[in-house]
Length: 399
Image (tube, rainbow, N blue to C red; front, side, top):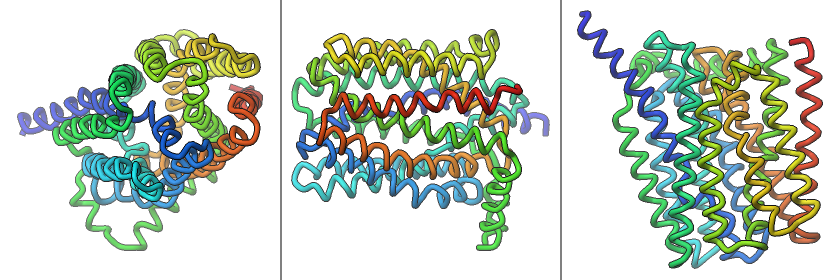
């Protein structure tokens, strides 16, 4: 009996070791070149941005169902594997998008389904695993390590993307498929964090509705979580909108290879900041560090877009180095207020609203870039992001 318990505990410790590597393969080389690849085919900022809108609309429609599936039926492991499979199909359609725009849209819809499966699942798996081995207090440290690996993997993927672009940018899809397959293979070694068989006993519509009601109830009664979630949603949707369109801004001054090299170096340093974020947050405080990093990044980005020069891409990427610390700080604030049973669903409820705002923002930024200029569109988006900082200060001034 003791041996069996030790073996189970060892399996959950294996999860904690695997999660950073899953994070490393979260973003394929296609991530950096996606907007460039779509723009290369469509020759329009708006049409290229609409692929991301398709991703997010699909994400919105599937976010809650996949969150419930994770908590109730498939479990964390099964949900991760399903997400990888949908992403494989998405990239196959992106490949056919060379011949027809509709294939790009279908690929975007499938990637949205994939993202909804992955949304909050890996973090929930990591949290559950630390809880199973009695190390829940080590979650922030484990998350910091996972975020570090994510950015280092993104940096390596950027170098690969640059090398591929020297040959033919269309090959980026094929290379990215290998990335996804590696993640799928690693996922096979995960240990499920709860007994899915027991969850199947409640397999009826009423239990699903009650499950969602419990999650929604937590948002209603927990004012601090609700306000934090709204601010997080606004910030993340603006940040990702700026990042997606921003790569085309870089192309005004740099070649594709130079852009990928710059991004890979930046990702390496973001990975370092994420890896050591736990120590930084302990020393200076979570909220204080988060606000300082956010103010620094938004101020620097505003100046870079207001006075666009060849130095702008480098200045923006330098400011991005604090992103690793910000992500860990924000995620920790959220998870401290989550219910254990609805952990994945809670993140899904946040993601579903964030996906909607992202779809609106990225489309608006693309539209403004078409009618005015890309730097003007990005400057307006950054200024909107800057207004979120006073909201954080106001809502946490008592802490």
